[in-house]
Amino acid sequence: MNIDEELVIAIIGAGGIGSNLVSMLYPTLQQGDLVDNIGDIRICIYDSDIVEKKNLPHQNFNISDVGGLKVTTLCNRLWNESDKSINEGPNLILQPCPWDIRSSSDLLPCDIVVVAVDSHQARRVVHENYENWLDLRCLGDGYIALDDSVKSDLISEFTPEQDSQSCQFEGAIDSGNIQFGFMVAASHGAQWLIQSLRIQSGDDIAQRPFPQVSSISFGTATRLAQSSEESDLNVVGGVIIPMIHSDSDVMREVSNGNHHSIIIKETLAGLAEKKDWPSLWGLADDLGKEVSILYDNNSSIWVDIGTSGRVELAPPVGSEIPYKLWIHTHPRDAYWSSTDKETISIYSDILDKAIVLGHDHYKKTIKINDNSIDKLSESGRLSIWTDEPIINYDSSEVI
Image (cartoon, rainbow, N blue to C red):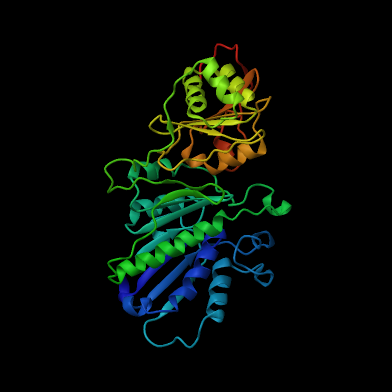
């Protein structure tokens, strides 16, 4: 507990994640006996931004809020909508803090911290100075939840210096293609806080949700290794052992429509290991489908067979991040499609390199902080990914 026997929760960011998290948390705490069991709770919300019209599709604000400070507007509305009959017993206080977090001195004394803003400065302040914290990130329909239980090397891997970015892809708001990863991240945050408070109150069956990487479309990609675990989660299943089978065996599977057979997947993995890109693309072409090969941090190989025009990077449960390499095929020409770019953006924190294969050439992109090299984008998460020329298969270059 902190000064004056208050339990203080700091929520950094009142955007897509933070505004929705607080809007779920505050009315929930007004019900039941959790606050009574703990005592006074103060929720401090930090953000210097004002509400803009472009925020309305994915942040918890109304048209009448435009022009006001996010934290003040949010606190006032929640207070006005709250159940005023709940006045006895411990207090539940909302405190707007209209400034950003760049150093530890910017935070008032607190017991629990939730980072809900895309700022590496704020994240590092929290990671390095507090013991009880949650760090939420999202892009598109995917989200990442780190907390104080995650192994320190993973925390560092996930927190590079990079420019801040909206939780929506470029053009998503104008086109109406709103992605709802922010709502899932906010829900994770609300659940994590409620369970943390239950633990604080002495509830011995309370359990915080596990840190994880997840997507609405693809489900939980992986749980993040925690400091208390001896090794990775060992949820193995689907790891492919590279083995190039005979042409006759492979073509029999292709002809019979057994496109997801282990013979085909092992052969694709074997061709990837040999860097035999023409044969790998040729097998995908025989299947009439795009294929994906993913190397995880242990160099384990995972193979997915997509459709004739699409294959996703779908990080499998049991794989260990960060991922070293994602390879996928296109039906003819190698280029970074809008779907490819969205995928690289979503998994930018946990992916090191990507390759797309065409019929007689390929393209690659590598995550690197070097402003002298052409990038996939001038800003956002793609600004740390190289935009490299097409390479013909007969080139002597080694990947």
